[in-house]
Image (cartoon, rainbow, N blue to C red; front, side):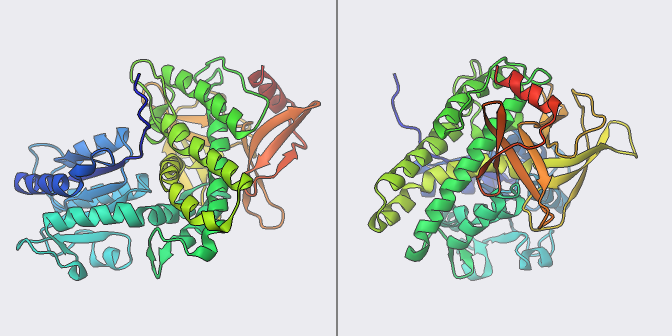
Length: 451
């Protein structure tokens, strides 16, 4: 039996259509990263369509895009193809660090995009020399800079993205953590001693929130209108019990074809048996962070904090992978049929909590009756078994209410029941409260889910 402990791996996507540069970049990646093949993995795509196919099935941490490419093999090369690909990934792949790497001096994305930090534009060196101040990189310099970004800057960068695009409550914690992962104005994984305690506490808060939200989402997917697995919930909200439930739920959801794009961020499991579905999150993130929580609560000393910060690095990276799913697939409220076109929907995204509400309009099927939708219901746009976009109602496992004081949305995760009372956990601060005003339909749905 293989007892090798799984390790965290960075994944890199290189979109390059010129064979000469492809060979140079492949050689440089092998020279710079090849000695740590378990730590770094890279894929190449020769055109925009191939790149889109790869990101549909894999979660990447760094994407390098050639400015001039074809949309499909054999088609004419245009700078607009690279621009279009970058813009699409900017909206659908929130966490990967994205660059444009091209031999042309004038970026197709426009100088303003580069200056404002919305795009990082690297020029291919024609002399074999690297000039970082001018963002000119040889193939070796390009590979070295990628390694540096992944090793030192990615956590701070991804936390910054999480602070903008995660659901309210979780986003606020991510913003605090991002503020700790900085050196001057740049993201860097160097936590000052005075911030180590707060950083670790926030890391554990973010992990618990992700664990409870993942569990609630899995419980919603296991209902009869979706995967219909028949798996019932454990009436306990301890992290260990939540992990056990997810270990049972996720393979069954995957067998029914309902894991969708979630699998690429939490682990899709064995492609034939689906054993191990969710283990990228459970084994690489949740288990070690739960153990970190136990160590800190049992033997807390300030001398051990720096060591714990370093030990939390890979589990946090795996946690960020799981969180990327909700950044790319936001929770939705106020879902209504579109007045413009049948089969289309309008909704408000539940993201960040600081910026104005963003409205979405999309085409999707709905396996349940979508009339008189309660205002507290939360949805997510899912990929059904036939790859079709499908609206999944996460309620009553996840609900939303508006805070009377701040007028901002607060998400609630169902927790447990005791003596006939159902309890919910606030995603804003982690506190658990009785669910006052629970509707009879919601109560019956929960009773059925708990068996």
